[in-house]
Image (cartoon, rainbow over all chains, first blue to last red):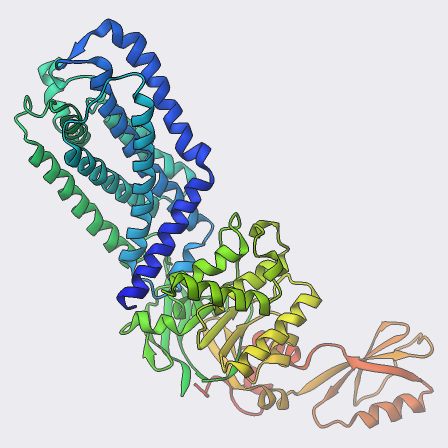
Length: 262
Length: 319
């Protein structure tokens, strides 16, 4: 395939993916935004008012970047996971496998589809947060970059999960037992400084902690990164490193036909 | 030029299940070719390997002289595949499904739209283009599969049981469409089917695969000429109580007014009629009880062991 044909193929997958989740927008876009709004009301407003300040900000201000990041992670991941698993399950993956489309284009198409949903939900969540928290983004390029990279990372991770999944049970294992615990323990609702030293050290092994705090740094201009002796650049490098590693693994598995060829 | 060349193709699935035992096959460009075999013979595995859905264990496959391993992308550009099962998202609209398939082949949005429109009109599904695919009948879904396979205008079209579960009217119109495609566009067509009448009517050349081996590969007429016996059903004017006895022919009664006769190769039918006439039996009409190809197919696959006794020349040596 030449470059124009490759671009056409990529745009076809992307258009199809965006069409898929926008067709069921109540479920894929509105539902996550409503869930986050409930978090703002129950945890942010009702409980948060008794907690007071965190890191020099109101609890709601502190919480918003974390909730945005949680939305990006969950929606990017689940979009690619459910979409690619469905394609495998109903065998419409064959539509792609019989064409000359390169595997990296298949991967990129699904990843950008997942990223689009993750970013759209992030924008909705940010809009929903406006009545609750007075936010002034301190560093727009950093904020956008962190959201973009995180959406990419978890879209690739969702793709990998879909490649390995052989049943609907397999689809829910990673999100339930790994992703959700890591998200909730990734400093979304609290500052890492509040943890006892043991749990603080354990938390440092959680990659989501760095992503949440990188975004918090972009939005609030302050985060736990400094108390962790980390810089924003290091956090970004870590995300890029994980993207590169997972992308290579996913492409290698695709080339080997893992889960898609007999 | 050969549209498809297969050399020593082997496939061993997990659990040491040997699906293909090193088959050889050539299909000429422009041919309408039948690949027949009982269930589990290796037809779908062969098609899967050609179309990249199945990874081969060893061997060589060339499409229009292009090696599928060395020039993977270029080889796949030449192929259109109609799989055995419906393999598109049935919640999407018909037009969208076909346009997307063109897009996967790298066609521009405009070109995809034009090609999709052309084949939807040719296959009489244009009026249903805005309907979700799941609302269509099984036969119309099959047409979507064919339109999808042709939307990039491939030079080699492979159809794996395209008319399974399709009613007679739709099946015949699909036959007509495939014959036109083969003649007008020069598309080479490889067809697997369980309807042997379909293969006999459409295909010029044939290969029979059984237990992972090609046991026959020849021209359709050449193969049919080797038919050792043929079975006819005769509708009688008066009911018969007893089966007529004759050492030269094998008679059976299907019902009192339908007589089945099996005639060996070289036996003139006149002898049958003369004998029946002598017995005072009046025949109103006559038809093939089973298709000629069906007779051969059963002979070849049932007696894969002593197949040489059924044919003039040994089978399996043509590869």
